[in-house]
Image (cartoon, rainbow, N blue to C red; front, top):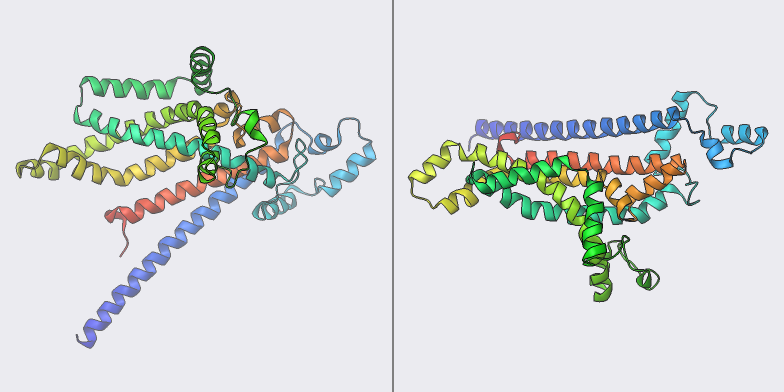
Amino acid sequence: MSIADNQVAAGRVSAHAIAILSSLGRFLVIAVTTYLGLLAVTFFIGRVIPIDPVLAVLGDRAPTAVVERTRREMGLDLPWIEQFYIYVKSALRGDFGTSVLTTNPVMSDIRRVFPATIELATLGTLIGAVIGVPLGVLAAVKRGSLIDQVARVVGLIGYSVPIFWLGLLGLVLFYAKLQWIAFPARLDVVYEYTFTPITGFYLLDAAIQGQWDVFYDAWRHIVLPAALLGYLSLAYISRMTRSFMLNELAQEYIVAARAKGLSETRIIWGHALRNAAVPMVTVIALSYANLLEGSVLTETVFSWPGIGLYITNSLQNADMNAVLGGTIAIGSVFIAINLLSDLLYRLLDPRTKVG
């Protein structure tokens, strides 16, 4: 290879490296900007709601001198820009203050309750993806058929019916009438004080420790709320899968594959679905993020001790440190999943690769 060829190759490598660094730089800028926006929104909400954080800590009957001293200690007498600066610094350290309701640091409460929400949302997403993707594929392949109409009705109900109503209906049917599931909670009382979690994910912890009676009990508690969240996820995933598959089945490479005599099964599942799988990664990731974010009503109906119920109880008791801390935690995970899904899309789709 000549010197000129080496220089051209080096130039291409350098240009590719610069493009990658530029893409990573944009990714980091978006992440930081979005997170600062989240902090700004939560800070503004915490200042405009008609709840005095000082009185929430001290009570309505605290002496005026004590109230003023506490206000100064909490930095609430400072200008808003200084308060926001302190707020951002504390949030970046994971310091969201102390919960009035539990008297624990908010971050320790979040670490305790978040695994329950993650376990519930993960199982719901798995249910939604395992059923929703094949349903969407079949609806697209048999467009206008009975299965397509069923998929559309399933999606319509999933989008239209309130989750709390489905939860109450499910409890009446499967718990009160049929007694197929356990009462709303995460474990029976008999296991609450004898089971020691390791990771905070009860199904996984029970399986690791070989406590299959605990595993079965945890499954009976989680199966209905996870199925309801899975239904919401299924409605979204099946609808988007159908749309992506219809687009792929109209492409020229499908016509060429059929002209070559390939089987319809191979064309659909081996070619069309494989190409549709790239945007489906983003869809499933967003569905997972939505379940994490939107689990408040489900956790409230089923008394599920996750971050949604934690925020609800804190809001009812004017515990704004806990409310804002939980909101930031959920928002941070939502941002991370969105950015990760976007990154995976760029890595998997050859049309978006740099270089």
